[in-house]
Length: 349
Image (cartoon, rainbow, N blue to C red; front, side, top):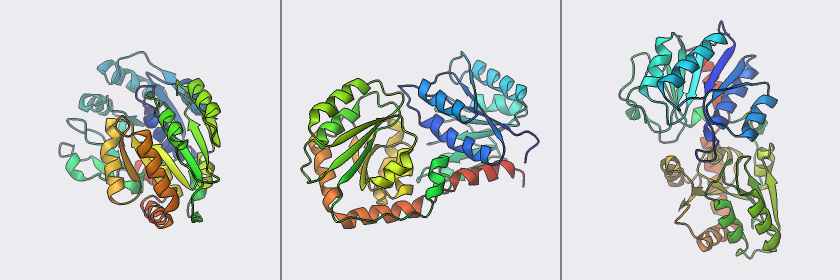
Protein backbone atom coordinates (compact mmCIF):
# COMPACT_ATOMS: atom_id res chain seq x y z
CA UNK A 1 0.00 0.00 0.00
CA UNK A 2 1.07 3.57 -0.63
CA UNK A 3 2.25 5.71 2.26
CA UNK A 4 -1.13 7.48 2.12
CA UNK A 5 -4.38 5.57 1.84
CA UNK A 6 -6.36 8.61 0.64
CA UNK A 7 -7.15 8.86 -3.07
CA UNK A 8 -8.59 12.23 -4.10
CA UNK A 9 -11.00 12.51 -7.04
CA UNK A 10 -11.83 15.70 -8.92
CA UNK A 11 -14.94 15.33 -11.08
CA UNK A 12 -18.32 17.00 -11.57
CA UNK A 13 -21.91 16.09 -12.43
CA UNK A 14 -24.93 18.12 -13.47
CA UNK A 15 -28.09 17.86 -15.53
CA UNK A 16 -26.14 19.30 -18.47
CA UNK A 17 -22.98 17.14 -18.39
CA UNK A 18 -24.61 14.07 -16.87
CA UNK A 19 -23.25 11.79 -14.16
CA UNK A 20 -20.86 9.57 -16.14
CA UNK A 21 -17.61 11.15 -14.96
CA UNK A 22 -18.58 10.80 -11.32
CA UNK A 23 -19.94 7.28 -11.68
CA UNK A 24 -16.80 5.87 -13.25
CA UNK A 25 -14.76 7.63 -10.57
CA UNK A 26 -17.02 5.92 -8.04
CA UNK A 27 -16.14 2.57 -9.61
CA UNK A 28 -12.44 3.27 -9.11
CA UNK A 29 -13.05 4.60 -5.59
CA UNK A 30 -14.85 1.37 -4.68
CA UNK A 31 -11.91 -0.69 -5.95
CA UNK A 32 -9.58 1.54 -3.92
CA UNK A 33 -11.72 1.01 -0.82
CA UNK A 34 -11.62 -2.72 -1.50
CA UNK A 35 -7.85 -2.37 -1.18
CA UNK A 36 -8.45 -0.78 2.25
CA UNK A 37 -7.94 2.75 0.99
CA UNK A 38 -10.15 5.80 1.47
CA UNK A 39 -11.64 8.12 -1.16
CA UNK A 40 -12.25 11.87 -1.16
CA UNK A 41 -14.36 13.54 -3.89
CA UNK A 42 -13.94 17.24 -4.71
CA UNK A 43 -16.75 18.75 -6.80
CA UNK A 44 -17.63 22.17 -8.18
CA UNK A 45 -21.03 20.96 -9.42
CA UNK A 46 -22.98 17.93 -8.29
CA UNK A 47 -26.44 16.41 -8.04
CA UNK A 48 -27.99 15.41 -4.70
CA UNK A 49 -28.66 11.78 -5.64
CA UNK A 50 -25.04 11.10 -6.59
CA UNK A 51 -23.70 12.94 -3.56
CA UNK A 52 -25.94 10.88 -1.31
CA UNK A 53 -24.65 7.72 -2.98
CA UNK A 54 -21.03 8.71 -2.38
CA UNK A 55 -21.63 9.56 1.27
CA UNK A 56 -23.52 6.30 1.85
CA UNK A 57 -20.36 4.45 0.81
CA UNK A 58 -18.14 6.24 3.31
CA UNK A 59 -16.67 8.70 0.82
CA UNK A 60 -15.80 12.26 1.87
CA UNK A 61 -17.44 14.92 -0.36
CA UNK A 62 -16.01 18.43 -0.54
CA UNK A 63 -17.49 21.32 -2.53
CA UNK A 64 -15.44 24.08 -4.09
CA UNK A 65 -16.72 27.33 -5.64
CA UNK A 66 -14.52 27.77 -8.69
CA UNK A 67 -14.65 27.90 -12.47
CA UNK A 68 -14.24 24.27 -13.50
CA UNK A 69 -10.77 23.56 -14.84
CA UNK A 70 -9.37 26.96 -13.87
CA UNK A 71 -6.06 27.70 -12.14
CA UNK A 72 -8.01 28.40 -8.97
CA UNK A 73 -9.70 24.99 -9.32
CA UNK A 74 -6.33 23.23 -9.63
CA UNK A 75 -4.85 25.17 -6.70
CA UNK A 76 -7.77 24.37 -4.40
CA UNK A 77 -7.65 20.71 -5.44
CA UNK A 78 -3.94 20.59 -4.58
CA UNK A 79 -4.57 22.18 -1.18
CA UNK A 80 -7.30 19.70 -0.35
CA UNK A 81 -5.14 16.77 -1.46
CA UNK A 82 -2.33 17.97 0.79
CA UNK A 83 -4.71 18.48 3.71
CA UNK A 84 -5.87 14.88 3.36
CA UNK A 85 -2.31 13.64 2.83
CA UNK A 86 -3.36 12.17 -0.50
CA UNK A 87 -0.43 11.17 -2.69
CA UNK A 88 -2.63 10.69 -5.80
CA UNK A 89 -5.25 12.85 -7.52
CA UNK A 90 -7.67 11.37 -10.07
CA UNK A 91 -9.13 13.89 -12.53
CA UNK A 92 -12.05 13.14 -14.87
CA UNK A 93 -13.74 15.72 -17.12
CA UNK A 94 -13.41 17.64 -20.37
CA UNK A 95 -12.79 21.00 -18.65
CA UNK A 96 -9.43 19.87 -17.28
CA UNK A 97 -6.51 20.54 -19.62
CA UNK A 98 -2.72 20.66 -19.75
CA UNK A 99 -2.25 23.59 -17.34
CA UNK A 100 -4.46 21.92 -14.78
CA UNK A 101 -2.34 18.77 -14.90
CA UNK A 102 0.89 20.76 -14.67
CA UNK A 103 -0.20 22.54 -11.48
CA UNK A 104 -0.97 19.22 -9.80
CA UNK A 105 2.36 17.75 -10.91
CA UNK A 106 4.32 20.82 -9.79
CA UNK A 107 2.83 20.37 -6.32
CA UNK A 108 4.55 16.99 -6.07
CA UNK A 109 1.35 14.96 -6.36
CA UNK A 110 0.82 11.89 -8.55
CA UNK A 111 -1.92 12.25 -11.17
CA UNK A 112 -4.24 9.80 -12.89
CA UNK A 113 -6.07 11.53 -15.75
CA UNK A 114 -9.20 9.81 -17.08
CA UNK A 115 -9.64 10.71 -20.73
CA UNK A 116 -11.84 9.82 -23.72
CA UNK A 117 -10.41 11.39 -26.85
CA UNK A 118 -7.13 13.21 -26.16
CA UNK A 119 -8.69 16.63 -25.53
CA UNK A 120 -5.75 18.16 -23.62
CA UNK A 121 -2.93 19.92 -25.49
CA UNK A 122 -0.33 18.10 -23.41
CA UNK A 123 -0.37 15.33 -20.83
CA UNK A 124 1.63 15.77 -17.63
CA UNK A 125 -0.14 12.97 -15.77
CA UNK A 126 1.66 9.90 -14.41
CA UNK A 127 -1.16 7.71 -15.75
CA UNK A 128 -3.64 8.44 -18.53
CA UNK A 129 -6.64 6.11 -18.62
CA UNK A 130 -8.75 5.79 -21.76
CA UNK A 131 -11.10 2.81 -21.43
CA UNK A 132 -12.64 3.13 -24.89
CA UNK A 133 -12.41 0.45 -27.56
CA UNK A 134 -10.81 2.94 -29.97
CA UNK A 135 -8.10 4.11 -27.53
CA UNK A 136 -4.57 4.15 -28.96
CA UNK A 137 -1.21 5.83 -28.33
CA UNK A 138 -1.68 8.16 -31.29
CA UNK A 139 -4.23 10.15 -29.28
CA UNK A 140 -1.43 11.22 -26.91
CA UNK A 141 1.58 12.35 -28.96
CA UNK A 142 2.31 15.20 -26.55
CA UNK A 143 2.99 13.59 -23.21
CA UNK A 144 5.86 13.38 -20.76
CA UNK A 145 8.39 10.56 -20.96
CA UNK A 146 7.17 9.22 -17.60
CA UNK A 147 3.49 9.23 -18.62
CA UNK A 148 2.08 5.71 -18.80
CA UNK A 149 -1.01 4.97 -20.91
CA UNK A 150 -3.76 2.62 -19.76
CA UNK A 151 -5.67 2.02 -22.97
CA UNK A 152 -8.64 -0.09 -23.93
CA UNK A 153 -11.50 -2.04 -22.44
CA UNK A 154 -9.30 -4.17 -20.15
CA UNK A 155 -9.36 -1.02 -17.95
CA UNK A 156 -13.12 -0.39 -18.15
CA UNK A 157 -14.30 0.90 -14.76
CA UNK A 158 -17.32 -1.04 -13.48
CA UNK A 159 -18.88 -0.38 -10.08
CA UNK A 160 -18.70 -3.03 -7.38
CA UNK A 161 -22.30 -4.18 -7.83
CA UNK A 162 -21.18 -5.68 -11.15
CA UNK A 163 -18.16 -7.59 -9.80
CA UNK A 164 -20.08 -10.69 -8.58
CA UNK A 165 -21.50 -11.16 -12.10
CA UNK A 166 -18.16 -12.06 -13.70
CA UNK A 167 -18.61 -15.19 -15.79
CA UNK A 168 -22.41 -15.08 -15.66
CA UNK A 169 -24.10 -16.57 -18.75
CA UNK A 170 -27.60 -15.62 -19.87
CA UNK A 171 -30.22 -17.75 -21.54
CA UNK A 172 -31.33 -16.59 -24.99
CA UNK A 173 -35.09 -16.89 -25.55
CA UNK A 174 -36.46 -17.33 -29.07
CA UNK A 175 -38.48 -14.14 -28.63
CA UNK A 176 -37.26 -11.41 -26.27
CA UNK A 177 -40.06 -10.02 -24.12
CA UNK A 178 -38.27 -8.12 -21.34
CA UNK A 179 -36.89 -4.66 -22.17
CA UNK A 180 -34.72 -2.43 -19.97
CA UNK A 181 -34.57 1.28 -20.83
CA UNK A 182 -31.92 3.50 -19.21
CA UNK A 183 -30.90 6.83 -20.72
CA UNK A 184 -28.29 8.04 -18.25
CA UNK A 185 -28.38 9.86 -14.95
CA UNK A 186 -29.75 13.14 -16.30
CA UNK A 187 -31.31 12.88 -19.81
CA UNK A 188 -31.89 16.66 -20.13
CA UNK A 189 -33.44 16.25 -23.60
CA UNK A 190 -36.00 13.74 -22.28
CA UNK A 191 -35.16 11.02 -24.78
CA UNK A 192 -36.71 8.59 -22.31
CA UNK A 193 -40.16 9.95 -23.21
CA UNK A 194 -39.52 9.24 -26.91
CA UNK A 195 -38.53 5.65 -26.07
CA UNK A 196 -41.64 5.13 -23.90
CA UNK A 197 -43.78 6.31 -26.81
CA UNK A 198 -41.89 3.95 -29.14
CA UNK A 199 -42.52 1.01 -26.81
CA UNK A 200 -46.25 1.53 -27.27
CA UNK A 201 -45.83 0.81 -30.99
CA UNK A 202 -44.15 -2.57 -30.50
CA UNK A 203 -46.83 -5.24 -30.72
CA UNK A 204 -45.29 -8.35 -29.17
CA UNK A 205 -47.38 -10.59 -26.94
CA UNK A 206 -46.23 -10.49 -23.33
CA UNK A 207 -43.84 -7.57 -23.82
CA UNK A 208 -42.88 -5.80 -20.59
CA UNK A 209 -40.45 -2.98 -19.96
CA UNK A 210 -38.62 -1.44 -17.01
CA UNK A 211 -37.64 2.20 -17.51
CA UNK A 212 -34.89 3.45 -15.18
CA UNK A 213 -34.83 7.19 -14.48
CA UNK A 214 -31.58 8.66 -13.14
CA UNK A 215 -31.34 10.65 -9.93
CA UNK A 216 -30.77 13.96 -11.73
CA UNK A 217 -33.49 13.54 -14.38
CA UNK A 218 -35.75 16.64 -14.32
CA UNK A 219 -38.63 15.00 -16.19
CA UNK A 220 -39.75 12.34 -13.73
CA UNK A 221 -43.35 13.54 -13.28
CA UNK A 222 -43.89 13.80 -17.04
CA UNK A 223 -42.53 10.28 -17.49
CA UNK A 224 -44.83 8.99 -14.75
CA UNK A 225 -47.81 10.43 -16.60
CA UNK A 226 -46.63 8.95 -19.92
CA UNK A 227 -46.27 5.47 -18.42
CA UNK A 228 -49.66 5.75 -16.72
CA UNK A 229 -51.35 6.70 -19.98
CA UNK A 230 -49.45 4.28 -22.22
CA UNK A 231 -51.57 1.19 -21.68
CA UNK A 232 -48.39 -0.88 -22.00
CA UNK A 233 -46.73 -3.04 -19.34
CA UNK A 234 -44.12 -0.45 -18.38
CA UNK A 235 -42.66 0.00 -14.90
CA UNK A 236 -40.82 3.20 -13.97
CA UNK A 237 -37.94 2.95 -11.48
CA UNK A 238 -36.07 5.92 -10.01
CA UNK A 239 -32.38 6.14 -9.10
CA UNK A 240 -31.90 2.38 -8.74
CA UNK A 241 -28.98 0.61 -7.05
CA UNK A 242 -29.61 -2.85 -8.53
CA UNK A 243 -28.73 -2.20 -12.17
CA UNK A 244 -26.94 -5.56 -12.69
CA UNK A 245 -30.06 -7.45 -11.59
CA UNK A 246 -32.21 -5.41 -13.98
CA UNK A 247 -29.77 -6.03 -16.84
CA UNK A 248 -29.81 -9.76 -16.03
CA UNK A 249 -33.62 -9.71 -15.99
CA UNK A 250 -33.83 -7.99 -19.39
CA UNK A 251 -33.67 -9.85 -22.68
CA UNK A 252 -32.73 -6.61 -24.49
CA UNK A 253 -31.86 -3.05 -23.55
CA UNK A 254 -32.17 0.50 -24.88
CA UNK A 255 -29.55 2.85 -23.45
CA UNK A 256 -27.58 6.02 -23.96
CA UNK A 257 -24.04 5.90 -25.27
CA UNK A 258 -22.18 6.45 -22.01
CA UNK A 259 -20.85 4.06 -19.39
CA UNK A 260 -24.04 1.99 -19.56
CA UNK A 261 -22.82 0.54 -22.88
CA UNK A 262 -19.92 -1.13 -21.05
CA UNK A 263 -22.24 -2.42 -18.35
CA UNK A 264 -24.68 -3.87 -20.88
CA UNK A 265 -21.81 -5.53 -22.75
CA UNK A 266 -20.43 -7.02 -19.54
CA UNK A 267 -23.86 -8.33 -18.54
CA UNK A 268 -24.51 -9.72 -22.02
CA UNK A 269 -27.61 -7.57 -22.53
CA UNK A 270 -28.20 -7.03 -26.28
CA UNK A 271 -28.41 -3.28 -26.51
CA UNK A 272 -29.85 -0.61 -28.81
CA UNK A 273 -27.89 2.60 -28.21
CA UNK A 274 -29.07 6.18 -28.69
CA UNK A 275 -26.24 8.73 -28.69
CA UNK A 276 -27.03 11.52 -26.23
CA UNK A 277 -23.80 13.57 -26.22
CA UNK A 278 -21.12 14.43 -28.78
CA UNK A 279 -18.51 12.72 -26.60
CA UNK A 280 -20.34 9.39 -27.06
CA UNK A 281 -20.39 9.33 -30.86
CA UNK A 282 -17.00 7.71 -31.52
CA UNK A 283 -17.43 5.03 -28.87
CA UNK A 284 -20.92 4.02 -30.04
CA UNK A 285 -19.85 3.81 -33.68
CA UNK A 286 -16.88 1.62 -32.73
CA UNK A 287 -18.98 -0.69 -30.55
CA UNK A 288 -21.50 -1.00 -33.38
CA UNK A 289 -18.76 -1.83 -35.89
CA UNK A 290 -17.57 -4.79 -33.79
CA UNK A 291 -21.17 -5.92 -33.10
CA UNK A 292 -21.25 -5.21 -29.38
CA UNK A 293 -24.35 -2.99 -29.70
CA UNK A 294 -26.69 -1.58 -32.34
CA UNK A 295 -26.24 2.13 -33.01
CA UNK A 296 -29.56 3.93 -33.48
CA UNK A 297 -27.83 7.27 -34.06
CA UNK A 298 -28.12 10.78 -32.64
CA UNK A 299 -31.07 11.28 -30.28
CA UNK A 300 -32.58 14.16 -32.24
CA UNK A 301 -32.44 12.24 -35.52
CA UNK A 302 -33.89 8.89 -34.50
CA UNK A 303 -37.69 8.69 -34.61
CA UNK A 304 -40.12 6.75 -32.45
CA UNK A 305 -40.92 4.57 -35.44
CA UNK A 306 -37.24 3.77 -35.99
CA UNK A 307 -36.78 2.88 -32.34
CA UNK A 308 -39.84 0.64 -32.42
CA UNK A 309 -38.79 -1.10 -35.64
CA UNK A 310 -35.22 -1.70 -34.45
CA UNK A 311 -36.48 -3.05 -31.13
CA UNK A 312 -38.96 -5.37 -32.84
CA UNK A 313 -36.17 -6.70 -35.09
CA UNK A 314 -33.91 -7.39 -32.12
CA UNK A 315 -36.76 -9.01 -30.18
CA UNK A 316 -37.45 -11.61 -32.89
CA UNK A 317 -33.85 -12.26 -34.05
CA UNK A 318 -32.25 -14.54 -31.49
CA UNK A 319 -29.07 -15.17 -33.48
CA UNK A 320 -28.34 -11.42 -33.59
CA UNK A 321 -28.85 -11.22 -29.85
CA UNK A 322 -26.51 -14.17 -29.43
CA UNK A 323 -23.79 -12.39 -31.41
CA UNK A 324 -24.12 -9.20 -29.36
CA UNK A 325 -24.00 -11.19 -26.12
CA UNK A 326 -20.89 -13.15 -27.10
CA UNK A 327 -19.02 -10.08 -28.33
CA UNK A 328 -19.91 -8.08 -25.23
CA UNK A 329 -18.66 -10.79 -22.91
CA UNK A 330 -15.38 -11.05 -24.79
CA UNK A 331 -14.84 -7.28 -24.66
CA UNK A 332 -15.48 -6.54 -20.95
CA UNK A 333 -14.34 -8.96 -18.24
CA UNK A 334 -15.23 -6.80 -15.21
CA UNK A 335 -11.71 -6.58 -13.76
CA UNK A 336 -10.81 -3.14 -15.07
CA UNK A 337 -11.17 -1.24 -11.78
CA UNK A 338 -8.83 -3.59 -9.93
CA UNK A 339 -6.30 -3.41 -12.79
CA UNK A 340 -6.22 0.39 -12.52
CA UNK A 341 -5.70 0.22 -8.74
CA UNK A 342 -2.82 -2.18 -9.34
CA UNK A 343 -1.22 0.26 -11.79
CA UNK A 344 -1.59 3.14 -9.31
CA UNK A 345 0.12 1.15 -6.58
CA UNK A 346 2.89 -0.11 -8.87
CA UNK A 347 3.37 3.01 -11.01
CA UNK A 348 7.13 3.17 -10.45
CA UNK A 349 7.80 -0.54 -10.94
